[in-house]
Length: 336
Image (cartoon, rainbow, N blue to C red; front, side, top):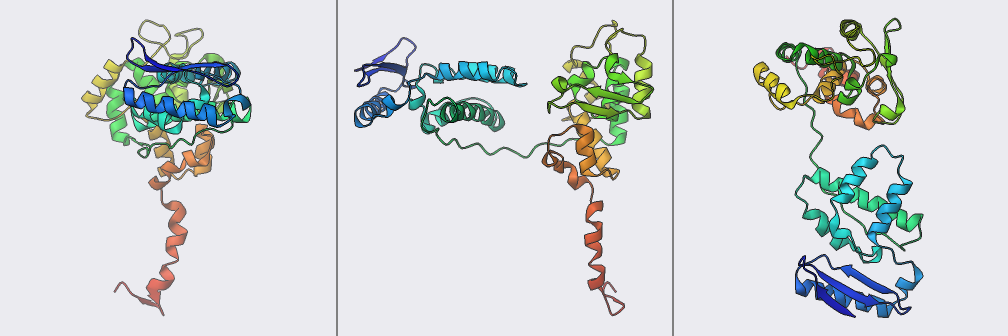
């Protein structure tokens, strides 16, 4: 048994189980005292219990690879891969040694928002839970506490602001912005929209399950504004609806052009995705029920739509009217 320091500055331990299995892993620290404390803890665990003989000793990397193999069809698997690459501190560590304190410390040191830290924690937790419930690699998984996140931001434009923004955008981007405001489609769905997804005569469009964030097909009712925008695009490209000034598919929204348009329109703190928030906000203010909005926008749950509820108080009117019976007592208006 030994503890040693590698050229990267981190301390490593080298232990053996009763069965002769060798355990070599990083302590995750460059502090010698902390490394020795972990080393002593591991030695105690090895000699005081049969824990390591009851379950197979599997490294974090093995769990990550199995997760990727089994979850390959997951829509967000690319995001998982990206996050796993950003967790080098967990490599060469056996799952049994991934304590709550260690995991929380690793994530705490990430220079990112609380929301992003929670995405790391959620992924780690999901993998460890798999190791417990399905793979039989762990007896239990550590409890990981999520960070407090700010309430989700809702930024929307007034109709006057929207008009100024559209005027400031180049024509091809203005068409996409108007279409987004008319349909509520997400940016990627607008950029990737093909003519095969559009039925102008039936005034409908659709998004396939593999292109939808919810993983479910989405039908889009086209209003007059949306149809007018689509009519303008006919003949520009054989496959894709929206094209740039060169007649090619728009691959992405230019940040430079977007910022310049916002500045010209006198609008701040507004992202392209906020066009979708604007669409939803306008509908709610027009009296569209939240359940209908959920279906129109393709949200998975009504909870995701409730953030727009404060924009309309019509559903509370009947309850507020009950006070009339109190305000008017025996035909007397208490307001006078």
